[in-house]
Image (tube, rainbow, N blue to C red; front, side, top):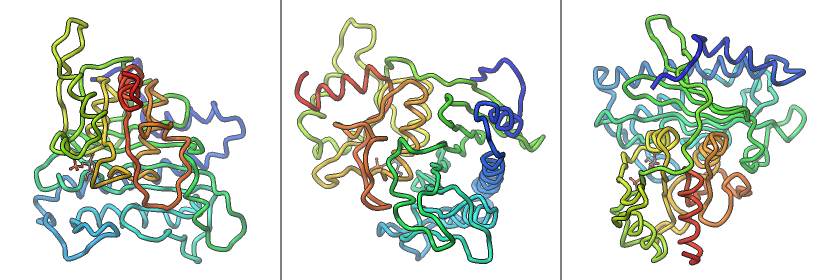
Length: 337
Ligand code: P6P
């Protein structure tokens, strides 16, 4: 799906975007160059995973008690080592690290705070399903040369100055926003550049797809069960019954939702009272992208981007996608429909 009126590389696009930000120092441009370098290194490892035989479980257990596949660790290390010496970041937080990732004292600190999930959807690595990297970027709030503190990463999502993801699928696609719309770039390894492939992504006001794990149906609230059953009913409104689409790799499911519309939902359930997805480095970046594309993202009650995180790895229920679909889902959840 190529929707562009011009051929332009990501580096040139970002540089031109500086015009939207008077007084831009070029530091964000440099940050994005460093980040997309890390993405290209991760893409190389993902593509070689089967050949390198690095697939398979390690004996490592991550902060959530889940066995970490080697590729998660490699992606995490690639991002940390690509970003910690650039002088652009003051601190980082990753799904794979229980604590904040401070900038080594031998490197200069910068003004940005990076939060990321290095390889989301990792349970799909062995079956060659699309996986991805998710990131959010904030301005540092602490001051001075001392180590940064949790306040720097526990900022509400509306304070993000940039957010995006990289998809490692049939091609490597980089999607991001700085608050001026959403653009996608596809990596062309023959020229070694990310090239603009979709300019100004806008999510349809309503879609025909719902994306949720129906294996959890018995654990859902009666209201959400009622909503999903409603979507499956025959009707003559030209939309219902919706089609089910669920890969189990959040970035892939949400990328499709962004382009085709509909709703992605990972609700709270009897086992996960706060849902499964992580607020800081999954829900907030994805919520910024979907809102910038004209959609909505809520936790079932409140706007995701307005939530005040209490800890780095906290979870949140997530309902995001087309405006009409999210609003209709909320009406079922609050009992008005
Ligand atoms: P379930 C992947 O592990 C992930 O964090 C998201 O990428 C994905 O949307 C979700 O979990 C899938 O969870 O419980 O449906 O397998």
